[in-house]
Structures are given as structure tokens and as C-alpha cells.
Length: 163
Image (tube, rainbow, N blue to C red; front, side):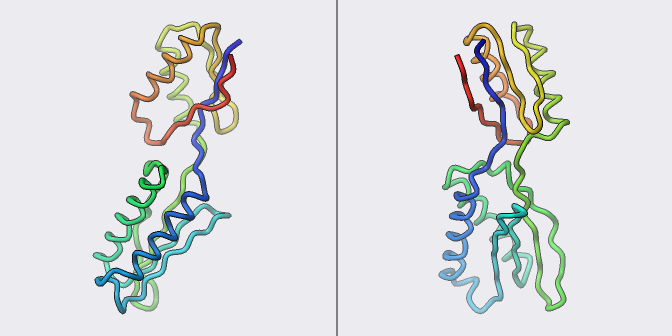
């Protein structure tokens, strides 16, 4: 029986490349000269930590990270920018969480959308992914097209397509 999995995976190597490109750009930009700015990626916790001197530079860094991720073919929906907070040295700090996996709430939404299509397919939630199976590949492709048209707040990838 044909099936595929709906997942939300992020290529951490591409995130690392985007962060390194941001660090290089900060080193060459005039508006960041003589400012204490640091960007570092914690691959284990999937968090990017940003430290800089003022709000304007923080917003510029947010735009930079988003732009470099898009250039590296990483969907910007997987980046969750937290509010910035002051540190002890007069600097501002901000965390950027990298969201991966499908949360239960969104998985239930996906299953509800699929059931609303009235196609002969079954959707089941498995950990942080949704498996869709059906008799016809055309029905599975219709599910993919419908989910691509929806805005669920996270990027979706369709993997393990088996005919």
C-alpha cells in the first residue's frame, strides 16, 4: 500500500553554514565595527545565541540570520526568535530556537485536514511525524498539494514515499 511520512526536519549543517556566513558578514559591516557582537550556534540544544549592544543591531542580526537561512534553502518558519533581554554588561541577548518535529497540536490539525478531504487515505500520528497511506498514489499527491496550500506555521517535508 503506498504511503509517505510528513515531517519537519532541519539540516543543522545548513544552519551552521548560515550562522558562519552571518559571523563573516558582521566582521565586514561598518555599522557593527567596534561593537561587541557575538553569534553562536549550540547544535546540541538547537539554539542560536545572539549578543549585541543595541536594539537596532539586534534587528539587523535577526534579518541577517533569516536571509542567510533562506539563501541556504532552510525555511525561515523553523526559526523562533525569543524576546531579547539585557545582560549585565549593557548588552542585549536573544535566543533563536530551531523548531524541528511536528507538535501534537499541529499533527492533529494535519490529520483533521486530511480526513476533511474525503479521500480513501489513512493518517496516523507517529512520534513527531504523520504517516499517510492509501491505495492510490493520486490520492496521496492530492494530500500533499492540500497541505502545501495550508499555513500551519512550520515547514513540512514529505519523505519515505513508497509505492
